[in-house]
Image (cartoon, rainbow, N blue to C red; front, side, top):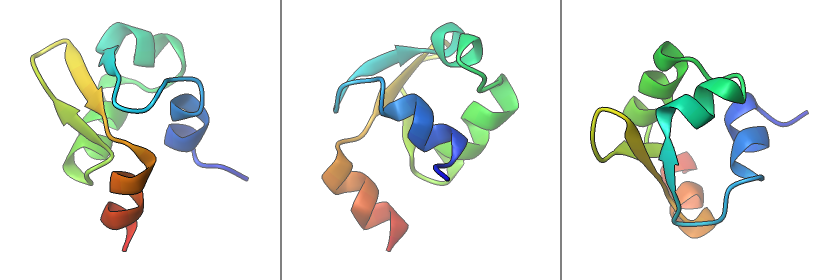
Length: 63
């Protein structure tokens, strides 16, 4: 089964900018967003915007 972040990111295009509120509405609260930012899945652009890496970058982070 896919992780929560994988399920959410399947609906968002590669290299997209995501609102924290959009992620929250899809089940990823602020604490989860912070955890995924710290682990390299997302980059914070501002307090409310996050950047989604490409699939290629995600593979590198996972290694």
